[in-house]
Amino acid sequence: MTAEQRTRSGAAAGVSKVTIYSYGASKELLFAAVTEARTGTVYSAERAEVEDPLQPAAALTRIGGEFVRLIRDEAAVGCHRMLFGNATWQSEAGRVFYEMGPALLIGQLAHYLRRAHQAGSLRVSKPLVAADQFLALFLGGAHIRLLLGLQQPEPRSERELLRENVALFLARHQVPAAGAPDCRGALSSLW
Image (cartoon, rainbow, N blue to C red):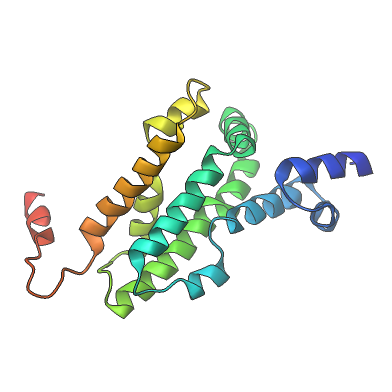
């Protein structure tokens, strides 16, 4: 990779030229570094420690908002299209992306959910499943239309999606106020 290619790659990926040079030994290492850096813009291990476990609505709104900004970003959309389009013959790139992107983010969110559970603000018996479910709420029809090049979501609908997804998640996992009925057990009896 030439110096000019490294500079352009760094700019396109939103990382510094130093990052490109320090991980430029192989395409896989470079891809991993870029993916990890982009994921860190949504939620990092450090941020998981400072988010207030007693304020899950605020934390989930921040995390969900950053996640939406990341997955709707033009470069991220292009990366997803490329990864899915080449998944059959470039499975290593998909594995690296998953481990340094979605799996890392799910794990960090699960860590926060464990802390909120321990603090008593949420009831989350399966933090990894709950983290995966929360993030998956943002990958519905609007995201599919975006990936297919059909329609860019409107900012107003993105804000509404964020509000509704946080409310839905909290309806399932938030500890009911003292004296309020806990109706979540009724759901399990349906299955």
